[in-house]
Length: 94
Image 1 (cartoon, rainbow, N blue to C red):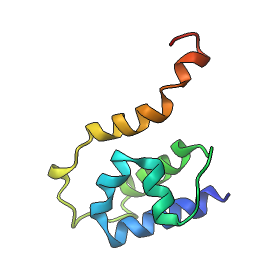
Image 2 (cartoon, rainbow, N blue to C red):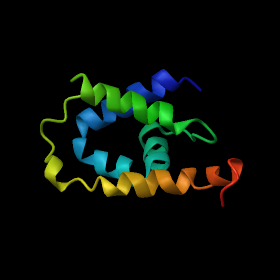
Image 3 (cartoon, rainbow, N blue to C red):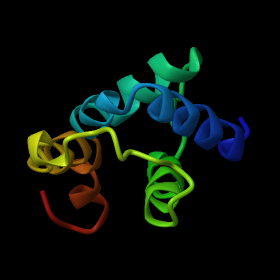
Image 4 (cartoon, rainbow, N blue to C red):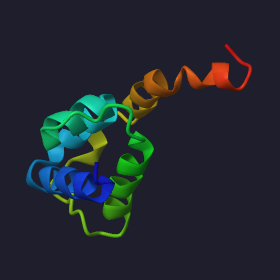
């Protein structure tokens, strides 16, 4: 699986439909799979999300048409928290 290709696909899809950013925040894995048409499996989603975030930060992914005031950034914590919740057991926490 080429992480850079997935980042490019997701970034292109978000550029075409910036409102999908809310979907990415709410359900990163499901949205990435839907946008790319391929299962992500056990891939490290943080690399993909970081790549998309970098595109937003450096301006290469223009989300100017998106009303950022309507984004629920708390959904990002919920979406990623569910995926990462099992990590506590790896570090002795439950």
